[in-house]
Image (cartoon, rainbow, N blue to C red; front, side):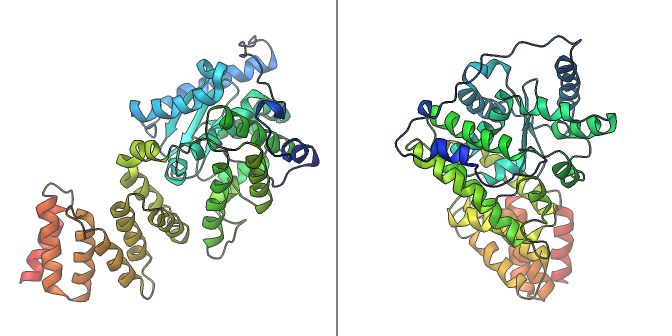
Length: 385
C-alpha cells in the first residue's frame, strides 16, 4: 500500500463474491499459491529479485531502522500468521518514518513504517494492512507492475517504493506514477480480508482504518481529502470503505488484539509522536491525537502531545487549549514531566511568574537529567530575578 493511489470501489466481480452473508473465507474461493521458488537470475523476474535483494541490504543499513527485536518479532509474527505457508519468505523491517505506509517487494521484503503503527489501533487493523500487502505478494502484483516500467529511470523510482531513497519527498510523484490498478487493489483487499479471517482477526477493523485516515485527510486545511501528502499514497474514499464493510459482513467474528498491540507500541509513542508533530501538519495531527484520547489510549502521552501541537500552532486560543491538555497530563499521581515544562513555558510567556517557576521546578525535579535542564534553570533564574 506504499506510494500508490488506492482506487475506490468494488467491481461487480468483487462484490458478487462477498455480498452473501454467512460465507467463510474458504467459501470465497481464494487458495494461496505454494511457496515461491527463487527464479533464475538470468530471467526477468530473477533479475528483479536480485535488485530487490540489493535494496533490502541497503535498507537494513539505514539509521531509520527500528532495531527492537521484540517489536519486530511481534509484527513479524502477525505477518507469519497471515502468510501461513509463506511465512519463511516474509521478512518484516520496521522503518522510522512518520507516514502511513507499508510495502512488500517480490522477494518477500516487507516494510512497515512507524506512522502506520502510530495510526492503527489494534492487531486486527495492523493485520488488515499487512494482509493487503501479502495479497499483492501472493498474486505477484508488484512483479507485474515492475514489468510495466520500461525505462531505467522509472525503475530507479520504483525502487523507492521498497527502499528509502527520497522517501518522503517523492511520495506523491510515485503514488500517481506507479499506482496499482483497481483490479489489483480490490483483489488485494479481498485476499487480505480472507487472510485476516483465517488468522482469527475481526475483518470489520479493516474499514475503520480508512475511516480514520479519511478524517485526517479531510482536516488538512487548504488541501482537502485529495491534497494531503499522506493521502497521495493512501486515500480512503467512502466507496472502498463500503466495500470492506461488505466483505466484513461475510466474514464475522474474530479478535481485535487491542491490549497486546498497545503494550508493544507504548514505549515508542513519544518518539513517534515527536516525529509526527515535526511534519508540521497540525490539523491532521490533532485529529490523530484526539482520536486516541477519545478511545482513552495512553491518555497522559496523548494529552501532552496534543498540547504541544496547539502550542506550536499558536493560533488565537491555542495556548489555552494547550494548557488544558498539559493540565490533563499531570492530574494523576505520576505527572507527565514534559507537560509541567509546557505549562511553565506558557506561563513564563504570559508573565505568570509564580506558576511558571513552580511548574519548571517540578519538571527539573522529575527529570533532572533532561537535555534542556540548563535552559530551564536559566528560565527559573530569570523569573526569580
